[in-house]
Image (cartoon, rainbow, N blue to C red; front, side, top):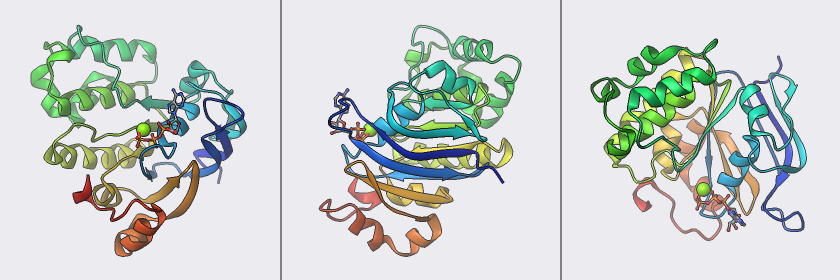
Length: 245
Ligand SMILES: Nc1ncnc2c1ncn2[C@@H]1O[C@H](COP(=O)(O)OP(=O)(O)OP(=O)(O)O)[C@@H](O)[C@H]1O
Ligand SMILES: [Mg+2]
């Protein structure tokens, strides 16, 4: 069966002579949730930006459902089904929650599951529909950012630093929703997450990227049972655990 996402030997970065993501291959099946782990500066954000067409690939291929995604073209990536939730969450802060969602619907009205579906996934937003996005709590903003993304009915959702600035209880609330989105909508998800144990509990598989290369990839269950393998992969990062972040 054709994989949902095929990232093949992708090399990218900010200077062609010095790529900071080198030869990364990552394959996701439909509805699969893969977490991308790795120390600061490893290239996680750069990889997601490149998959979303925001920075060009120097070499390597990217396919969604077997269809080539044009290089370095954000709109082509979205049309191809790749939607990024960036670590800055990119909300319209002066617009209400509802307006933020409706604007996202407009971009993909014919396919989107609609505002109601988002509110079913994130009931906390229902009470906040008329509030400006800029006045939401960090957790609510993250819910809205994910909501805006899923309304576009992605085939592959790319989420950068989901838990940045959020209290652990909020992260624990949002992560299982991603699991549900993957299962019910059959959306494949690449989740960049610093909290290793939390991420492994929700993911099917994990890949660890260090200095721009994938150094370890295995099922989340296997890695949860052998955390020392993840720790060793982090090369010189010391003990890696959900407590260390
Ligand atoms: N806009 C930029 N211009 C030049 N170099 C950059 C830029 N953004 C990131 N880099 C460099 O690219 C490398 C990879 O950075 P990247 O942001 O992808 O890492 P990351 O794994 O997302 O790290 P973090 O966990 O801190 O978010 C780093 O060496 C970083 O300094
Ligand atoms: Mg990053």
